[in-house]
Length: 125
Image (cartoon, rainbow, N blue to C red; front, side, top):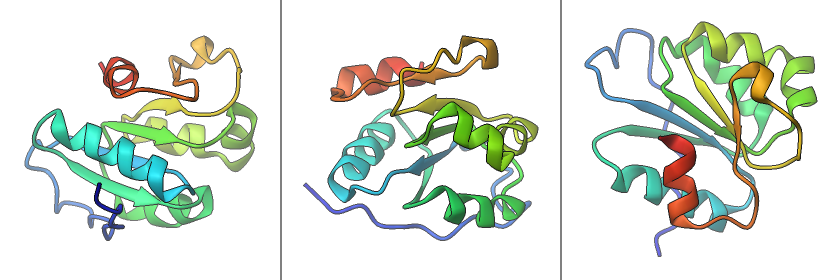
């Protein structure tokens, strides 16, 4: 299994070719690798890995459009940081990988740990 490689954020206007853009926020490199490889196996896309929500927040101004954000985070943290609105403005679907929060009001999903490749694919469908 390959280690996750952190990609540099895509500048605004540099990814308007219709390729889906996925963000993964995960501290554990093994889990991040599983998520990233499963996403890449689904088809042509760009996956950008961040270790923390703060890293993601710093890169968001450079991202115009996001297909899906898979985040190691709880709902209340995203809301407190304003990431719910920042991701929503970029069209991102949100999948949380921790917490038992009811996120249906936000239209988000929760991918409960431990998860399988099949569960990852289903959460992104």
